[in-house]
Image 1 (cartoon, rainbow, N blue to C red):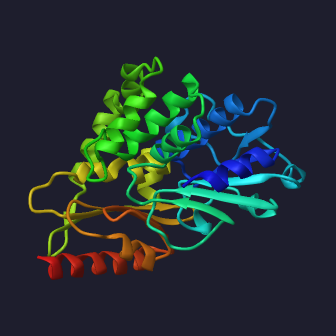
Image 2 (image 1 turned 135 degrees about the vertical axis):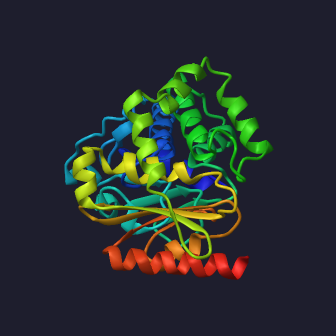
Length: 313
């Protein structure tokens, strides 16, 4: 599955690794993991990781991105990770590279790179990178192992989501052959201070239901300014407060931001990905996202989700 991309890695220098904007643990974990796998197994190569800031995942090692000039792409291989659409890639200069590759686990929307390894049955892009390391017979350094394990944990919901399989646990066991401190990873990912607990309580109070029991939260720019919280912590961070509500199979979190209205869609039973794609987003069958133009478009998306809930009932 990875033979052509491995040959491209051997043939090019430098290698510049991209991933989606507003990164989660899987995007950063796969990016840092692949970077250190290449450095370990192909000594002397120059490897850069680029994109926007790590945000709440800044606790992960080596997540300060490289600042490189356009000239760095002249003879480079640009590798795009954990990204289903061109508009989601952080740093569009990947297109300057003469060679491009993509490794991704999202549902296919469009071809982005010359070489592509895509498998939506994987729980995470980190899982794909771990499988690549096994297939290529690469040595696994500790930093790569802990980065990939962190991404597997986040995108599998602590190994709870439907995408978790026997393969997931085999790959996790492969990574844990290195002395990963799993307690520290879980503490950094999930420990909450009192202010965060109170913030979650405020968002629980904001939950509303459509006629056919789609749960949703809408947060305006004014509310965001009053909260003094970053967009990621509200958009991605607060969608989970609607998990596990009895009788609710679809839920969505809308957050007004500078770039538009961030929409995080989730479902426990149904494929909500086509709704995200309709509005320029993407992701997985039961976890997708999109950036919308305004509140009116958000309400149209909510109406589409409500119709889905009615039709699937």
